[in-house]
Length: 518
Image 1: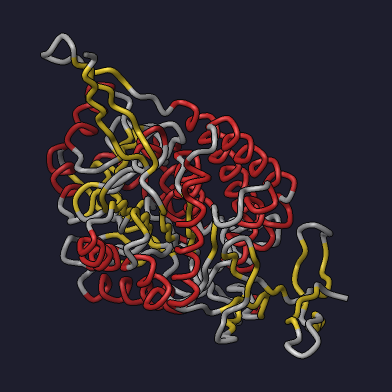
Image 2: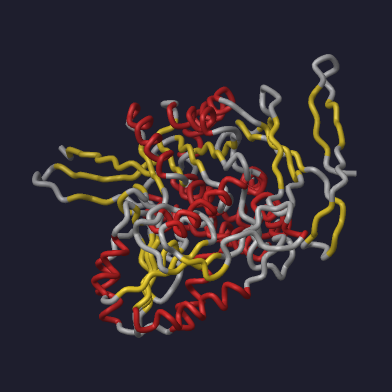
């Protein structure tokens, strides 16, 4: 039999339990074969209680690789979001007054539970989001590290004495938690990006209302369950599920929330800024990107190709810091393109639960269709497809949102693929003549989240890195995230920073205490 759930009878007060079994099958990473799976039912967590939506609304979560249902999630609304905020507000004084050592112990325990439940949570992440199981495991392990890191960083919230101009006066500056934090995460990294917000908020002494992506809430709910099971006081962590237009709007507009942390589209970020301004909330926004990669003529070609392929196509390009456009020095362009295509052609595509798969499906038809549109626009303006540009052949790909990793050449900045965030597996490659031209092309964008440069010359590395308009620059590396360092964007890629001590400080208020000694 499968897992149970139910409702308490209004007449008898007893729980009425029902059992669900569904007849589809999927690949099991845990057992190494095909077996029947049970439908999972998740709930919201408000004030320490697991609840269904008051309306009874349910959404079905489907596997992007097969289209089959894998879970059911409640569809909450403004009432549930308001209740969660009120629960967090009631819990705030107790949690803010909890010693840092006790808060740290609970966060460490959460990390332990995440590791203990690694296979289960990773599997649900792959089933609902599509990414390969190896990448799902990596995301869960990194999430555990985030909780461990902020458990210790929360012990280092220091104050300071400030010199004064009066002998009998002292000035003390302290840091205190901002209050209730509402945190909203996207579907591409639904667990890790939520943890980037929850862990520093809790370490700072804030209470939290979390809203995972409605279309991929299962693994994120399991992370919240780990926090709950670790022993956090009721109301300290709350989970609400439902559409952004209702649940998200209540979290942003309700004056109880004093901090909004959001990762998602730039247009949504603009809306959040506008609404949050009405009650002068603190806001952290990690928004869209259009990350360039510059490959200089002296670059290590094999390293640059491997890094570019990985960062352009990993998670099917559905990464905010994905390589969206590649600029290659004219002298090495032909060799780079040939090796890039060779690697792209060799990538294994399939159901993410197959441990040998490198690329799973795209998340849904909407993102796949946008990828098609960007490719079609580029081709209509003179670009050539030298690999990909379509769905893979084969019956096993028919029901999922699969798409081949795509390489475009003869591209220009008149094309959408070079101006907008595709959020799909497309790598447009453009040649450049000199370094200043490459830098100008890379900066010719309203976005500035991440950028990359590959070169053997340290002078060139600093010359380019200091001139690129981005919040993070990777030199001879295809990732700008580091747990101990700040992450965030310039220009229309966002406001504020996550990770490191900077991520913790965004949940703290400064207070000046001026003391007369006589």
